[in-house]
Length: 200
Ligand SMILES: CC(C)(COP(=O)(O)OP(=O)(O)OC[C@H]1O[C@@H](n2cnc3c(N)ncnc32)[C@H](O)[C@@H]1OP(=O)(O)O)[C@@H](O)C(=O)NCCC(=O)NCCS
Image (cartoon, rainbow, N blue to C red; front, side, top):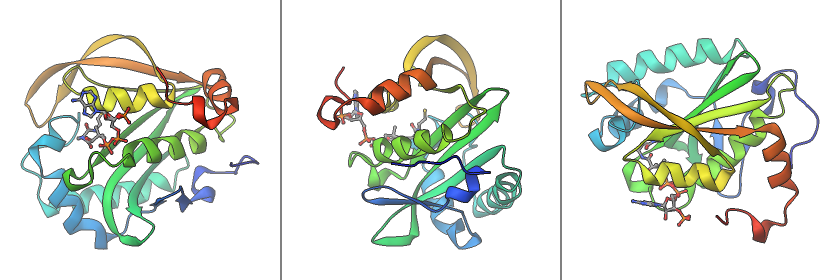
């Protein structure tokens, strides 16, 4: 359990969970980032990732992330397994907007179905709420992405409505289910015994 508030999200990085490490990206992540984000079945569930996605996109993305992570208002971290910390398996991000923040994530297809998103999102929500200026976290998923909606439900997010969002890879607008996790809901969930979490 994380305790005192850091002066910046970055102070808590690398963040470890049971099986994973959430760490700063490096340019050595470019090949695996391009490989997994270049999978249309990953990109089509995301707003901003174009398809096809080349190593040049991945390299530019990492340069942008290293700059924006340093501002303290956003944090995008590579997810890797503790047993192989240099090998990117996914990405998770949180971006401040006023007193809220927006979260996003994706995992490479070989790593789906192992509970990694649940574990990484759990770690990142805990980190996000260490920031005293954050009252709520927004997420959501396209309506045809029940796996991500399930990850959010397990993390305590609840549905607030629907919106239309552009998907770069699909080249059009897609219905998104909007979800939110308030600080109060997060605190209540964190106070539950482990065995009661994730039931819905
Ligand atoms: C969505 C995604 C992040 C899930 O990652 P993951 O590591 O496989 O997720 P987890 O294993 O932690 O949990 C997935 C949950 O969804 C459930 N699930 C999977 N497919 C499902 C489906 N078609 N319908 C309903 N539930 C489904 C799983 O059973 C699991 O729930 P459970 O633990 O209650 O059994 C991953 O598939 C991904 O990166 N997809 C492409 C990009 C993306 O969608 N990013 C999120 C954008 S909002």
